[in-house]
Image (cartoon, rainbow, N blue to C red):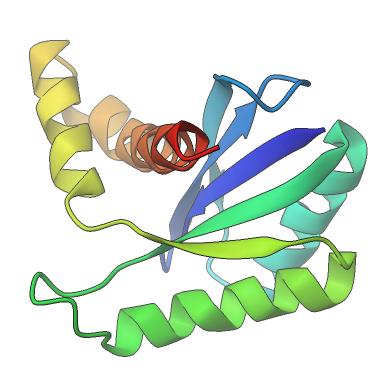
Length: 135
């Protein structure tokens, strides 16, 4: 069973999938969708196509661990996915994943549009890797 991580964003969201055994991070990509309902539908279809049995949604807490509006929106997405798919959905503290993703892209010399379109996928991979380390 695969595990999928989602780094939710208002215009684009990063998605990372584990290998079929659910042990290591595999592919990562960006889904461009502003509407949460349409994004949920796309993610549900992807879960069905790829035999995803667990979803991890990034929870963007503040540095002091408080939860703000972005956290509430991520929780709404997680609830939608859980209700639609009837599989476990875990909220994952994603503090600093985007910062780390930018650092990684700096090290690989990614700039401009390529960087903007890739940073969310890299952040989703970091969320997935963090979750997989706890299994």
